[in-house]
Length: 146
Image 1 (cartoon, rainbow, N blue to C red):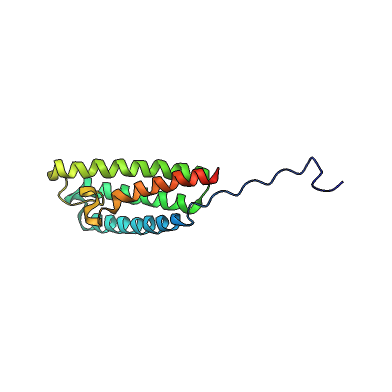
Image 2: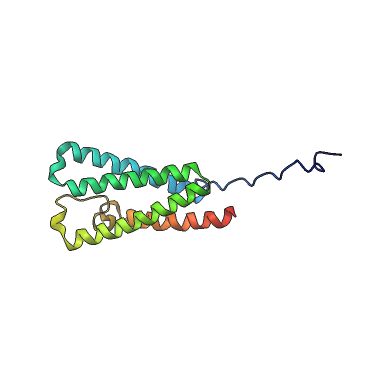
């Protein structure tokens, strides 16, 4: 009796799809850069005077956390990380749209801009494009992994 005939030999698990490969590598790079940019901006703004625009600086800190978590999830890979990143990308898009609209409707609430102000205009609108691109990639990664 050979090893392949043995009933104890289980089928090898399928390798999980790596989220950070191919186009996902570009997403990892962009999210990594935006993590550093948003976190650095937040730290500088908070040190210089948090009381000048606490709402804007808190939203920038939140954006940095979201970007960092998505970067980590893309690098980590696997189905659980893919789902978590997908939820965070959706939350990021909602945040960008909400904050972007809020900054246009009530600019007095934001004496200083955030990463997501004016739909990310200060960052060439990448904050509104990035979560859409991320969600497309993460949905595609699901179909490839299955």
